[in-house]
Length: 308
Ligand code: MLT
Image (cartoon, rainbow, N blue to C red; front, top):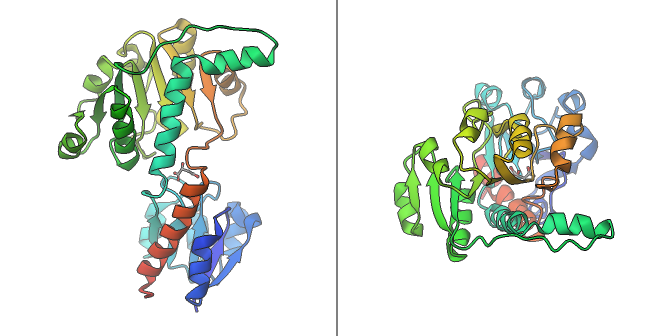
């Protein structure tokens, strides 16, 4: 019998599937801290986490039976993949399950910032009647940086709303772009140059850390709106704050931060900027996405262990 340790909140459907196949499932939400997890992981064959649990090298090295690390979600940046590979531990995730939820949030964020709805709402809470002037997203140009599953889902929805869409990726995904009917480039400067909106959908890796920096921001169109529902670390947020203050960037919608929750003074200043709409990493937080994720991850675990 395989033993499964779950250290973050995961919907029950997939865990029930595992139990029906004879897995023993232990939910231990206190074990998410690496110093605790490195002890509690012992004796478990499978570890299921979301983004809160950091599966460090130390945790992986202290595991004695671990065969599979399952990320109930998409990003693998909280797992030391190198350490897992060295020990022959398989890492599985569920990237398809949440693409619609994230893409819907991105569309909502674009419209919110374009219409300055967040600003009007804040004013309303202060008892002010602010009839703000915004603009429409139809006819505007959207650059999608990172043309994976989520990026392509955003592309489809944005196109349906009348936007002109261009995707960027390090890999040549021009055929997939053609299928959706949008433009594609592998040149970062090319993708940003005429964009009214830029949305980020790259995973966090050493190559993507701070890839959207001051130099690149300076090459963007004046007044551009930036959306980030990927990872905070892929953009230099200090440079973003300065660009918002100078007006170079007209607005931003942020769902992710280099520090979650954002506590540093400068990060609080960014979040509170009047042209910023900020949410608390809720991209994948829909009932539908979480249910799909739980089921997909259970299937991936069984596949990895050869359980029918
Ligand atoms: C993901 O990578 O799966 C999303 O950012 C959602 C999450 O981390 O919970």
